[in-house]
Length: 365
Image 1 (tube, helix red, strand yellow):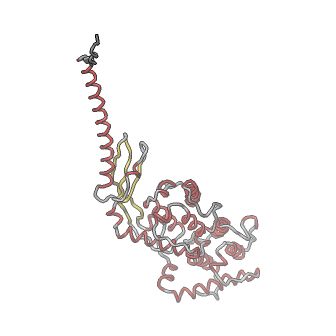
Image 2 (cartoon, rainbow, N blue to C red; image 1 turned 180 degrees about the horizontal axis):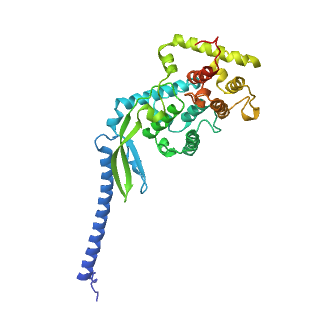
Image 3 (cartoon, helix red, strand yellow; image 1 turned 180 degrees about the vertical axis):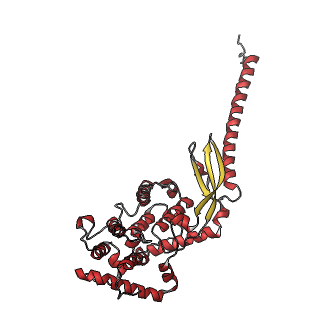
């Protein structure tokens, strides 16, 4: 006798088991919802920082992939429209383009054109007469940062090896405009660039930091330039400032008279001056002239007779200023770096200081 198939039956779930399963599922769902809320909150923090009034709206969330404690900063839109900031950028761009015109380099945007260190390196080489031993074209981020490090290390040495905190390799390479401006303003003042730096330039900066796994933003005011005296040292005008600005005809007379004064003494050792900037820029003529005026021989081991590097020329000019001070002359308002950079005004100041003490009765200014 055939038997009918037995109907499969599903074992009943124990109510306790079902209750436990529901509880675990609910806890898992709630944890996932909590995690999602935390992610949403973190995203919202970033979005708020990005979209708050005055912020740069074209910044992408990828820029906020920060490590714990890491921070980034950027200028508010409102500050970017500041007329003084725009003027400062234009002045610095024009200065760089004039300095590098022989290399046919044209800078149009400070952030985009300077971040990789190539043009900054060219500018430093032009200002100092030195040369970096590194490849010219670098697409790799590693090589770009290596070039930047070399440039910034060299710039730090200009300030007596006092490392600056207003710029860094990472900030420059990340196209941080504030850091780039601080660096360029420092270079412009150090090398007495023939430009007028706008005073009292400040910007509003938003700083975003990852703290306790959350993005926190704050606004700070960043001062880029103050009064000229506070940044570049003593800018008190003297007679040569007035001559250069308002009396070019008299400047020609002063220049010729100082050439005559220098030749009256340098001719004794068969040297003839025809170009003040060119012939005095390496310091050799200054040293020889001081020796002739004071009646002594300066040992050749103490200076470079045929200087080739920027540093050697600066050493020579600095030595001549020391010899002047030893002879009782007041130190002129001129830096060795300025003379080496062919700054006529600085060269004239040094010669005029010598002239005041050693002038002859038949030499009149």
